[in-house]
Length: 125
Image (cartoon, rainbow, N blue to C red; front, side, top):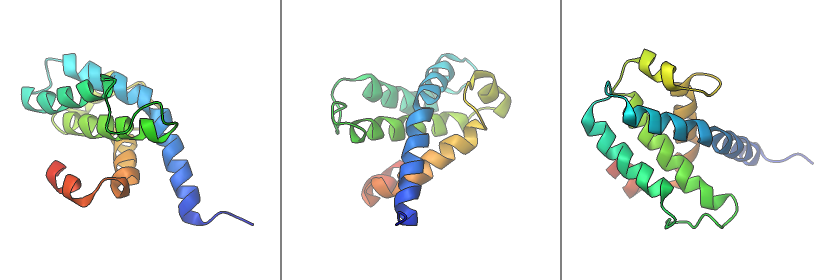
């Protein structure tokens, strides 16, 4: 008996998101230090980075898998804000992951969109 397509998509998406997290975190911190990145997106990204680094989370990290999902989604959101504000060459210079950073971030945000309540999605834009 095969798994329903949505379960398979969820598992594949979650695996890809969690595997991308180390590269997302590196990209986030590298872009934060880069002087070519405007200050305004750095403020949003800085708040997200502080949350990700904080031991206090909305979903505690000691809860397997789900505890890391909020960190991955927030890091992807912060990176998305940063990469939209700079030249793609700057992003490529700092990206260690496989594939295109823009596609990886977009894929994670698309995967996680259903996890975030609608009022919060509207607030984040």
